[in-house]
Image 1 (cartoon, helix red, strand yellow):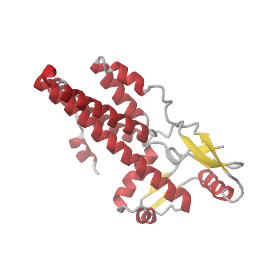
Image 2 (cartoon, rainbow, N blue to C red; image 1 turned 120 degrees about the vertical axis):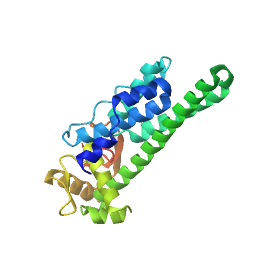
Image 3 (spheres, rainbow, N blue to C red; image 1 turned 180 degrees about the horizontal axis):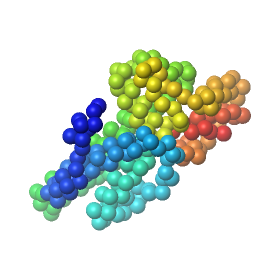
Image 4 (tube, one colour; image 1 turned 90 degrees about the horizontal axis):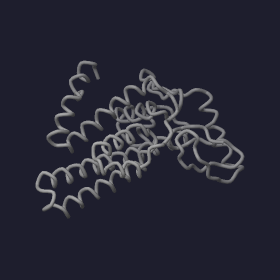
Length: 245
């Protein structure tokens, strides 16, 4: 995609602020979309480890007693935690459902504008929650295909998923931008996923150890997710690609 076409699609902060003033559910949608897209572009130049998950959903829900702070913390949480798509997706669906139920139950007290705001805001959260859940499932499937079969051909990965070549490239680039498969990159000319030898060696150790060791659960030092690896060998986090010991 050319730079000119991406600029045309960029949502300005002025537009977002105006939507927040007149109809905040659309403002939430545009703000999440803007921050998510900017995170992806910044990630192309940043392979740092994921940030610690210090902002809990309890804090987010508490600050929703003061909606502006709650909205800010919610968006900050879901756009900064690149490897918590499943947990954040579930929480957004639950929270969105609560907003919709609250709007329907208090429709008379809230008035028409309040009803639309609560239902609209809840619908936006559910939409993004389902989107995050699907992304988590897709990323886990890509990771299993690549790690399980030592498959680095983009065409073969796309066929195994299955998905189109274009979608596979876009998804894998999003994973790389988020810190999956450290120090790896897409070679679009050779149509391959290029990994450093250290990453490939870790994956080989995982496959070798399956024949001699039993499973055990460990916590990933990178993203904090729970993983199952084999005793006596190395493993790789299925969410962020970090090496597990």
